[in-house]
Image (tube, rainbow, N blue to C red; front, top):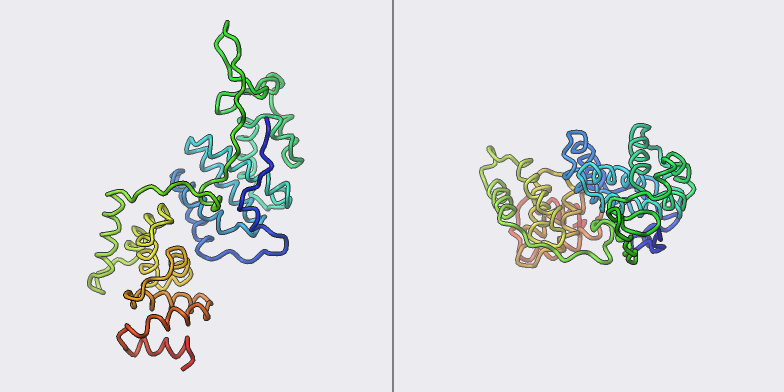
Length: 315
């Protein structure tokens, strides 16, 4: 089975020596994905882990750990195609950086992952990278001869046929694509926000605009985050999640959602101010100063605003 040698645009971010600590937003998504996996909500786990893996693109070993968890969540959710795509991306990370070999994976996690590889992956794929070569030997000899993949194609490239019928010729293998949250160079066409998701956003907005003593800000953030994570291209959803995170003083997450949604317009000075504060509190003073300066001409002056203006602008 031919495996693509293309590592996609994501690999360009994985330059040696470029490692840095993952943004707390992405480590939070990793944690959420692990919690969802433990409670057997595998679809939610896969969704959160896809986002987490994107945030670890320049940290090969943590990325390998994240990809293993993502692949298992996809497998448990019945997404055989996603499992295969994620594993092929892991192969490239291992081949380039030895990240899987060096990752400190929990023994039970590694065992479960490798068990699924033995059960689903063709021997030729496993043998293509040294770290997985020994797994091919664990497959039954008869299975190695003509192992059927989840797509119904055996290792020799022919689709299984009923007895008495000739085997069908193999079609060319498609180029493997990474999960959408990782392959940013060629994202799929965004799907529209559903009516149910719009209701979630409306509920979050209602909470944020409600009485300060009765607001459930955590609930507002959860509702807004669910839509924002599902629609990375929706500026409205990103800004709503950013505002909810700001009101909870979750600065790193607020900054991450603001960056994803883009800078608010000049006629949204309050939102620009929220962005400035989130950027400042998360350590990006230069970007905070730019956002704050654009918000001040249209922003009502209050002691709170002026205190941050002094902190950020130094005057």
